[in-house]
Length: 161
Image 1: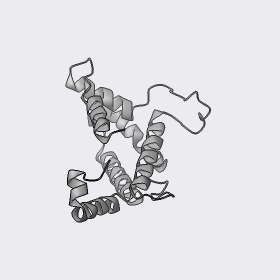
Image 2: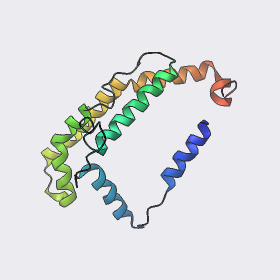
Image 3: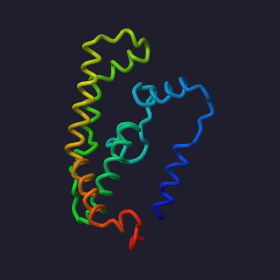
């Protein structure tokens, strides 16, 4: 599929308007989807034991997409990025701070300073560990260097189909 078509589809998906027009309602809806557990959405497929819920499925999808995209970018036959990139450890690190998000949803003033610090520390640790195992810095440096060495291909897409 053409790269431009993919970008157009992504733009179309992100531009889709939800029927409710209140910004707060939209934000709370997104918040609930991400941080508050509502009901059981167990996968009915044969891999139901491997996929716990839609958040876990999203991590698996994002991890596989990123790792395979990087493998294709480097034109390697084996994986370049560790399986730990966007791995299950993110869910395990998130579970201890999940009750704080439930409290935030119910009454944001009930969260203590210690809880807030724990949440921030956990997210910062998750971000930096993920950046390390996913090799974000290496990838962006390689892309920048390739663009500097090949401006015709990088900027004007010469010879790229």
